[in-house]
Image 1 (tube, rainbow, N blue to C red):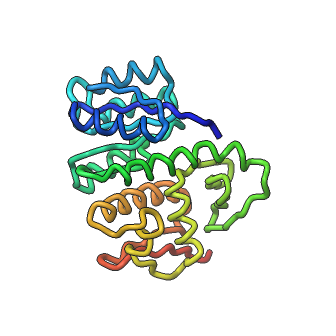
Image 2: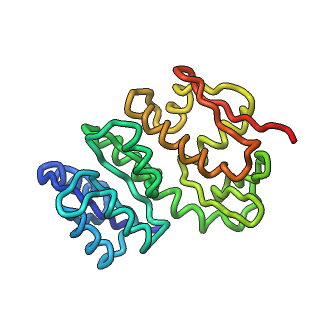
Length: 234
């Protein structure tokens, strides 16, 4: 794994940008800052950072549009959204664009650093683990390779994020059982709160899209309780 990582921070709130960049530099990261989405896109092309942190609401070009263009240039770079928004629609929109994680403002710097470390571990773990024997789970027509975070259905291969893999593995192990939302949030974020509950919903939304090729596979939402992975036998 690399000793030093470069992070692009696109945030138009100057004070917050300064606090985040100084915190991350103290953690040993090289931080490039941008005050709007257009500048962020330019900095991304110039410096090719290892991870992108983007505020959703920015002038000139918002974080969503910046992320769309970054994803065309590099589909694999970890992308974390910062937002003052909390609606499910906004969170789902971010994940549909290709966000790897979502953090609601205001947040604690320790939580931001923890999520950054998790995203970077996932990205740089893939090359180190490809040679190892896979641990695989069959989910209907899919084969889920836990080590490499890959979901296969015939010739179709989907690269899952680390959080998607953790959630899918846990649901698959408990196939047919209702897994409480609080259990899934503790598993991923070590904390059960309103904002993580919205993020969890966003990740489940993404998993459902990944699993849409097999109509016998579904993730049910037991409102107010949790989620259940169901595989209907053919």
